[in-house]
Image 1: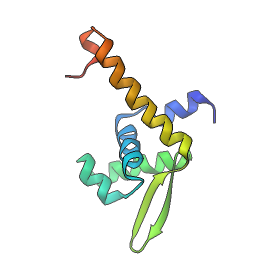
Image 2: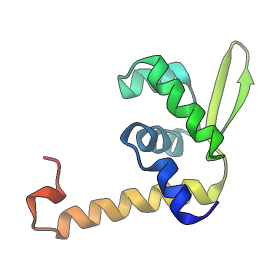
Image 3: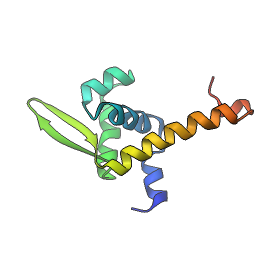
Length: 101
């Protein structure tokens, strides 16, 4: 996968939010993600499926639940770096459109 394809896979609010949560929590079920994101289960499942197709997220069965996790350390590090860069950019940017306040 090239860089542009990777960014296209993660450049959506719900997908990026899922990745942020998985990066912080290591692994989560769909129900956990639904509760944290406050979004409908079909929507969360749809985005998890897309992330799996891009091989950004993997899953494993755990009893009656399926647990989702980021597929590798590089993706996890990338998500962390993007979050940090975004925080720094908002602090230095004087344009109101930089902050969704």
